Image (spheres, rainbow, N blue to C red):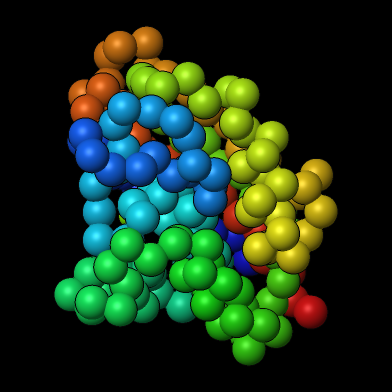
Length: 156
Ligand code: MG
């Protein structure tokens, strides 16, 4: 078995969509970034790459590359899964924590896990998504949204 951890953060700003774990959330603010800025999927991809010993998304999908402008992070996740296939690895489980002061995300976590499970090629019971605030104490979670991910990979 291989374990990996990923972390990401993006700034909240007006005029952008808010997409987390591939699910669009109605909000007056969205996340700023080169792709769709889905911080949770980015953390997940870094955890997968970390567990596989394959580097990180910044190297694989550089933000200097116009190909990735506004791209859905789910498409990038599918590319990461291709790399895992090549390395004869499969997902055991994934656990994601989204840290956000706003908006409230609890009503979306079930659709998030369904969405990610499809792309990770596992049942939704192997993907957990939870959301927490920092009780107003975190500068990051007040100005943006952060996400942690831990994954376990298994050899095929
Ligand atoms: Mg990112």
